[in-house]
Image 1 (cartoon, rainbow over the protein chains, first blue to last red):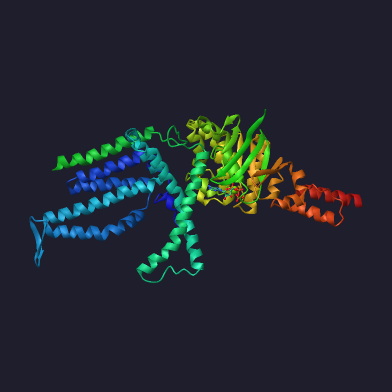
Image 2 (cartoon, helix red, strand yellow; image 1 turned 90 degrees about the vertical axis):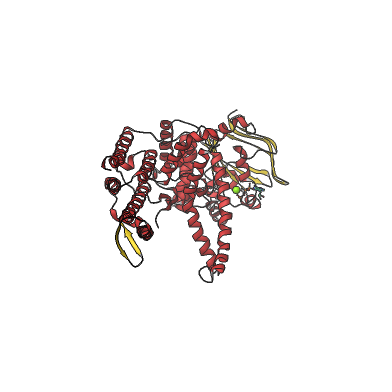
Amino acid sequence: MRDITLGQYINGDSVIHRLDPRVRLILTLVYIIMLFLLKSIPQMIMALVLILSAYALVRIPMKMLFKSLKPIIPIVLFTSVLNMFFIGGDEVFSFWKFSVTRQGIYYAVMLSLRVICLLAGSSLLTYTSTPIELTSALELLFMPLAKIGLPVNDLAMMMTIALRFIPTLLEETDKIMAAQKSRGANLDTGNFIERVRALTPILIPLFVSAFRRADELALAMECRCYNGGEGRTRLNALKIKRSDIIAVIVFLGLCALIILSGRIVL
Amino acid sequence: MNDLIRFEKVSFSYGTNNVLDSIDLSVEEGEFLAVLGYNGSGKSTLAKLINGILLPTEGKVYVDGMDTSDETKLSEIRKTAGMVFQNPDNQIVATIVEEDVAFAPENLGLDPAEIRQRVDEAIQAVGLEKHIKDAPHKLSGGQKQRVAIAGVLAMQPRCIILDEPTAMLDPKGRSLVMGVIERLNREKGITIILITHFMEEAALADRILILSDGKVAENGPPKEVFSRKDRMISLGLEVPPVTDLTLRLIDNGLPLEKDIIRPEELVEALLSIKEAAH
Ligand SMILES: Nc1ncnc2c1ncn2[C@@H]1O[C@H](COP(=O)(O)OP(=O)(O)OP(=O)(O)O)[C@@H](O)[C@H]1O
Ligand SMILES: [Mg+2]
C-alpha cells in the first residue's frame, strides 16, 4: 500500500527538493497565475518547456506526469472540441451544420496547453513536498493572520495530527471490518441502501475509538507541556537560504520573460 | 527533606466514586517505585494526580516542593514529572520520530540547537538512533513505546511516571522497554514510578506500593512484599513466577530462602545447593 501520509511525494535530493517549501509553494502559485496571463500559443509552449525542464531537474520520469494527466484528458478533449465548433471567426472547414474556425482551433489548443501546464505545475509541488512540509509552509505564510485572530498554530497542529493518525485509523478500520465480517456482517452485497446500512457497525466503533484516542492524545500532549501554539519553537525551523533567493530570482525572471515576449511578438 | 514527590492525606473521587482515600506517600529522588493493585484500584488516578492532570479532592500533592494545584507552576511540574502511557499509538504526535521527540522541547520554547541536542540524547538513551527519520506508524510496538519515552526524556524530567508501559507489547518489546527504564534509573538517576500488572517487572524496583480499596495496602521492598504469597493473593495479585516456583520447591523440601524474586537469584541458590551436594 502506498503511504498516504506522504501523498504523492517522491523522495529525492534535487535542487527543487532542497528549496524551502514556502518558496516552492509561492513559485507554484506564481506559475499558475502566469498561465492565466498568457495570450498566445508560443508563450504557452514556453511555459510548458519551463515546467518540463523543472521535471527534468527533479528527474521525475515523464511517465509519472502522463499518469497524472490521464484522468483529465477526456475532459480537456471534450471542452476543446466544443470550443472549436462554437467560436465564430474565419472558417477553416465545415461539415454538416458545423463550421470550424481558425480562432476556434487556436482557442482549443490554448486551453489544452493551459490545463496541461496547470496540472504539471501543481503536481510538481506535491511530488517534491511532503504534506508536513506544506503544512509548516502554510503555517508560516499565514502567520501574519494570527494577529487578527486566525488560530494558525492550532490549525497547523490539527493538520499534523490528522496526517499522523490517518494510517492508524485506516489500520483500525481494516481490523473492525474483519471483526464484523467474522461475526457475519455482510458488507459487500445488497443494494445501495443495504450497503450503506452495513457501514454503521463499522463507523460506530471507529468513531468511539477515534474519540478515545483523541482523549488520550490530548492528555499525553498536556503532559508534554503543550498549551496551544504560543511560544512554541521548532526543531527544524524553516530558513530561507541563498539558494532559495537565487531560485526565486531565476524563476521570476523566466516568467517575466515569457509574459513580456507576448508583448514583443504581438 | 529529599522527597521529590509527596502526597499529604490525598483523597480523590470521580463524582461519588471515591477512588483514593487519604493517601500519604513520598518518593525520594532517584528511587524506583513500582505501583501495583487490581483493576480499578486507582493506580492511573494516582499517576494523574502527580503531574496535575487531576487535582486531589482533599489533601495536597507536591512535586519538588511545588503544589500541583498552583496553576502558575503547572508547566514546571509537568517538566519535572513526565508521564508515559499504555498505548504508544495514542501519545505520538508527529509523523517523524525525531519531530515527535522534539515536541516537548518545542513546547518549552527552547532554541533549535538546544532542541537538536536534547532530541539526539533522548533518542540515543532509548537506542533508536537508526529510526530517527522513520514514520512512527511503521515501528513495532516496543519501538513506539521507546519513542514515547524519548519524547518525555527530551523534557529532561527528574521523574518519569509510566502507566503500564509494557501492557501492549510482546516479550521482546517488553524486555527492551524495561531495560531502558532500568538504565534511566540506574545511570541517569531519574526517579521512576512504574505502574504495572507484571510482578517480574515490579521485582526490579527498589520499593513496591500496593493500592487496595483506595488505601495503601503495602509499602516496602519487593523481597518483603513478595515473600508473603497469601497476602498478595488476598490483594488480588500474585507473586512473580520465579517466587512461585521457589515456594513450590520449598514445599518439596529444597532448602531455599522464601524471598527469591528474580530468576538470577534462584539460579544462584540452586547452584549453591548443587555445590553443597558434591
Ligand atoms: N474519568 C473517569 N470518570 C469516572 N470514573 C473513573 C474515571 N476514570 C477512572 N474511573 C474509575 O475510578 C476507579 C479507578 O480507576 P483507575 O483507572 O485509576 O484504576 P487503575 O488501577 O488504573 O485500573 P487498571 O489496572 O484497570 O488500569 C475505577 O473504578 C474507574 O471506574
Ligand atoms: Mg490504569
